[in-house]
Length: 368
Image (cartoon, rainbow, N blue to C red; front, side, top):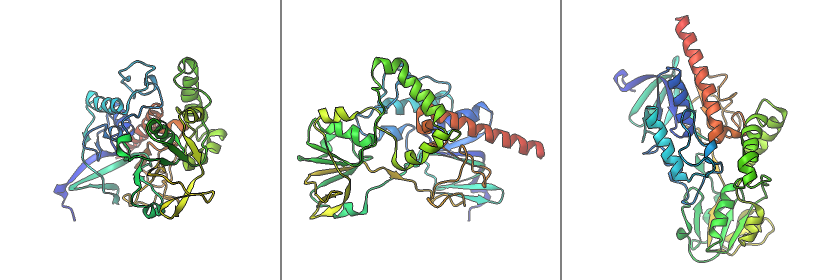
């Protein structure tokens, strides 16, 4: 048991110091509400810096600024992942957001009328807890991957940094979504690359083109993704299950670009035969490297509260948990709109949740 001396009292604990958590912090600070942000990374922005070396954001800089601070590059540039990490660090510093880095939350539970947040040696008693993390937490690789020949180099996309990590020989990329397509195009310059998985489709324009910069990106990102495809519209409600389960279409890399780079398509990997990846068409892929772009799985086992559905996803409405007043989620894909995990979309969700917290706190104070 923890003594009272070891428990720090705070009105709101925000779990996660990425763009979602910092956005929540900005809006709470603007509303004059006290809070602390707990982040497992050693440095603000590390969740971006740890990704592959050549990664750039899918959206131009004019869409990547959080509330109160524009992104400090040319509006039409596509920032690097390090620039995004540095921007988040500068954002937290500019608005003096109370981020405690290197503090991983181990458990959230109910303690009478408040929440107990346990993070290593630290304990926090809070009226409100905002889980400001995407559901992409644990990298997922199929169980049969362990049966591949030990001579094959295997990496999950979260561990891939650059082509130097791979050995000579062909590369199989398992998973044909955005990460798989981006990595495939990069590796095609030094290896023969096979891209395995279903066709996820693609947006019908080039983000970097002049028409896109002038009109299409703004129309699609700010209107369609942000206002049309929401949980309030029939179109959004129809699109949500597909996007949540299978991801969105290719955004930057197009099929013709992969074809031009010499990337060939293969069916989905379904198992292992004789130490090699077994494909859905019963053939095997004789490759020297496999990169698993198979996504992530949500792990909320550290939240000891009855707020999850049969798929272990939180029951929430615009981030607010109906049967657990005081618990909130921000940063999920399609939390409210298709833009909810995008830089320009997460801020709206964060502001909504911060306003709910302020309203509930003010109401509780008036009642007392």
